[in-house]
Amino acid sequence: MELTSSFVLLLQQFAPIFTLPTFHTFLQIATGWIVSHRHRFITDIIFSSGNVGQGHWSRFHRFFSHAAWDLDLLSAVLARIAVRLLVPGATLLWAVDDTLCRKRGLTLYGAGMHYDPLISSRAKSLVSWGHDWVVLCLVIVGPFWAPSKVFALPIAFRLYRNRQGLTKGKNKTQNKISKPKTSNPQADHRTRPELARELIQLAASWFPNDTHMVTGDSAYGGKSILSHLPKQVHLISRVHSKGALYAPPPPPTPGRKGAPRKKGDRLPGMAAWMADDSQPWTEIEFDQFGLHARLAVKSQKALYYKAGGSRLLTIILVRDLEGDRPDSMFYCTQLDWTVRQILSTYACRWAIECTFENCKQFLGLEDPANRVPQAVQRTAPMAMILYTLVVVWFHQDGFRQVRFPYRPWYRHKKEPSFADLLSTLRRVSCEELTHRLVSQQGDLEIWIAQLTELLTRTG
Image (cartoon, rainbow, N blue to C red; front, side, top):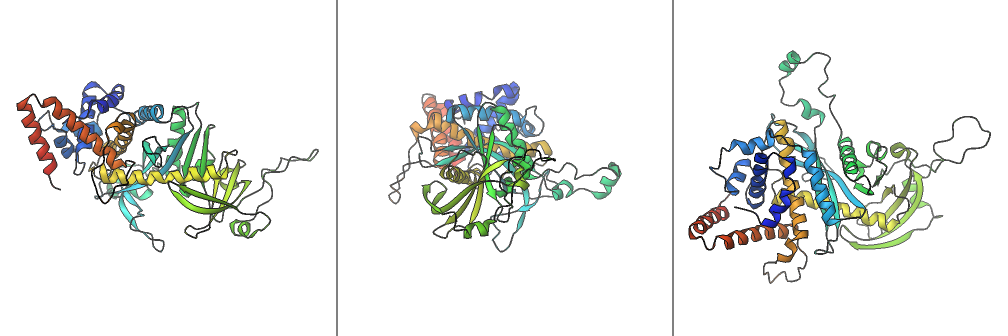
């Protein structure tokens, strides 16, 4: 099986990252990963790419566990490709969040018990054993082939290891023997916001002359990120409902001794601000991706001192007039943005949740069964990297060849989903290979036999 030549040309841009043999393995893994309809185990990728018997199978495992290539360098090349083709010259919009990939086994590197939103409710929080990935995505709003959609393209990745995951499954007796008493196994622990800050700083270093706008939920809006943003990076996030807001500090008084004030008087809390009739509400209606609502808003310039120190922020108080959403507050570090701009941009963050779902459902994000550290840290991100490459390929070439299956019960569809993008890539690849082999009866028969086997496999 081979992918269409236009997609292979896209993959060729990653050649400098790898040695020549490793790059050939990378092409074969990308092919098998995309065409596979089953779990993305390494052995199934070997079969789907048609490489059974083509060298020893261990080279595919060693690509993730031992090969000399760097994931951050691959992410940098991926980011430059995506920015050049999708958002040249524009403000770069990013979304950061984490997602849980459920796993089994105590000896699995980096696994731990993490909050599981799919089985939890507002009344009770539940956890699952697995890997928790912090992901930074480049957000693409309204591409010309899907004007009403937003796509979040995964670019950079970090595996979050909670304190339990640092020690779970290890032999305590061996730890005491092999490590000095002064060693602390939890000294290397980093929180999700700290990992997200590392990814944001990495992206800012790739594009030092561009303006970046990052969106994140309340978990990524605290001091760990807000107080350490690079100069050209701005942030939109939530303010805690009980967060303390302060007025800007007054100008220093001439002749007064001592350091100038860092903050002004404390402002009313969220409940008091809502009840304050001195500032009228402004009604704004939204009908866009991620936000279909009629909202009443108030805004002010203030300090969120505990999280952002003396940095002045635009604070927005939001009430849903239709009652579907709880009252909430947001902040933005870009002071010249309007309330509509801020809320509209934050709503686009929802695309990252769609990306996680698509990566798990169509690209097997949760499937890899690697256990050693380097393989674990490289394999799952490959699913998200290929997600980004599929969208980039479709934007560059695939949109010309998309077609929707005939469904009399669904006639109004005009814009493709990610499933349509992936189906188009698979179909174009099959058509191109079939056309090339049509004059070679022997090879064509082999290809038809392989295709039949691939499409009829179960499980």
